[in-house]
Length: 193
Image 1 (cartoon, rainbow, N blue to C red):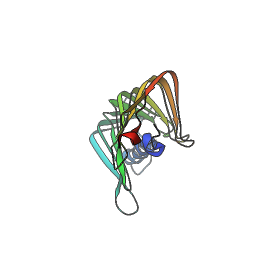
Image 2 (image 1 turned 135 degrees about the vertical axis):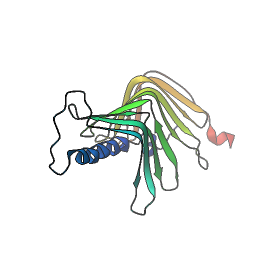
Image 3 (image 1 turned 90 degrees about the vertical axis):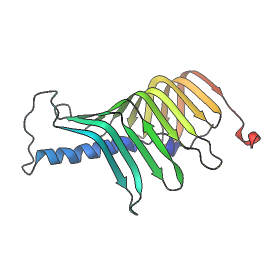
């Protein structure tokens, strides 16, 4: 199984969340640029039923981020997102979808943590089958272009299945490493066609 790594883990999710947090924080600060002092654990903004779209230079959608709720805590500079859903479009490639029960992103955008029913899918298109990855937790480091988890992971692609405990995916080197309890079942896709 050799999935296209550029669409397997769209690490841009952390950058999108961090950028939105920065923009919203500037709105909350107002013209003086000073945030009011808040008690620890008190958010400075909450957005319900969020939906944001990033467009490319030609005016086409690149990313859509939706969430039931987005909350920023200035004391820790952490943004919490409930039921995040990200869709990434890339030219003629099928869309990539990322979903989880909840997520957190640091204010500097250096770390994104997705928790609970993490699901990443890429639709089937042409001769390429559907790609699907599930886990209970995923940490994304957008600067290093690395996604990792210490948890159980299942990856399916066009009838093949690969699973293990502990995973690291490096988008820069296009390597996927499963750490332990690895098993797989591979289907010869070409033989079926």
